[in-house]
Length: 381
Ligand code: ADP
Image (cartoon, rainbow, N blue to C red; front, side, top):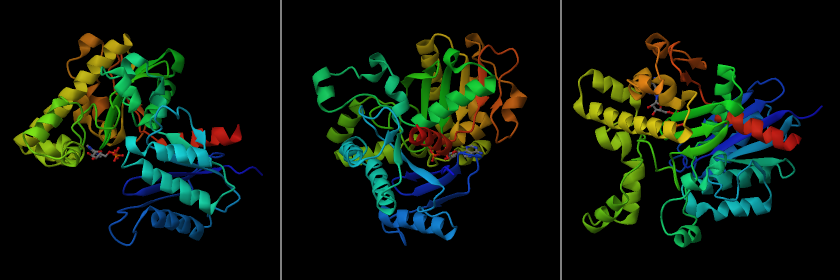
């Protein structure tokens, strides 16, 4: 019997998430989360990964189980080197470590996950699936910043994009939901979670995305500012006397919705808006304004848009965000159905009006399934 299970590991900056997927029957026999790494009983990522391995073993699904075909690791930054899911070797690990300067918060945690899993099962195929990979098809016109080319190349400064597994999964699922051929479908995907990004996808190929060198660029997020005038950084340093680390923390951790109104959870912001809270209203308006700008920009980038898809925590759950983001865009062929938009559901669904030229959909993202699918395809090949 061939092994059909894939363990997906997402070893993040402060937590490790895992899911065991059976690719033969689509079942998910185990999943879990180890949180607050470094804060209490779990001192570091190595301890967290060992806890995951113990949990799996206690349930009879340990890393040594013969049903396990591979481990799929989520890796945030693949730079320009990794544009495909990649079978992990010592060399690959070294290359991912070499990309730490581009993702100092994420890649080290990803690498630890890989190292511990390889120690526990040296003989098992392990695959790295990169958050940046799906965006590697962006043309130079979208991927390059308009700065001195030599400087940019020397320091690997370019737009990489993130949330790639989600954008890939959701755009493919959209073709399925709409019963359309992926190759002929132009889609704008709005991944709105705590982190948020938009992408323009032409026939399944990413041609632009809102995150850049790091996940800081683009949309207003839970705690990140998204787009701003880069001179703000010089201004805060020169006039405000802030250090680079302080500005980094400000823009990544204390900005976005949190910086604007003190809350980064859209549910809480909605509740406060219901009470007439002006700061919450303004935060929402700024969030929506940025989102609309990207919808407009990507409409122009694609020329013809067939579908707009909302996904992730906010995109899947907030009818208010979806309605405000697309209000008054009938001129662009975009028309929501008020009833469909507000129906609560956990399934992929169309929320546009019958008369809308552009289909609008909500599709729950499934990064674990996408990582498992890519991992399994590679090890079976
Ligand atoms: P992450 O980027 O952490 O993976 P998620 O995709 O899980 O984020 O999204 C988390 C966010 O989703 C929360 O911060 C919250 O603002 C939002 N969210 C979850 N449920 C709802 C809801 N019912 N209404 C509005 N926003 C929601």
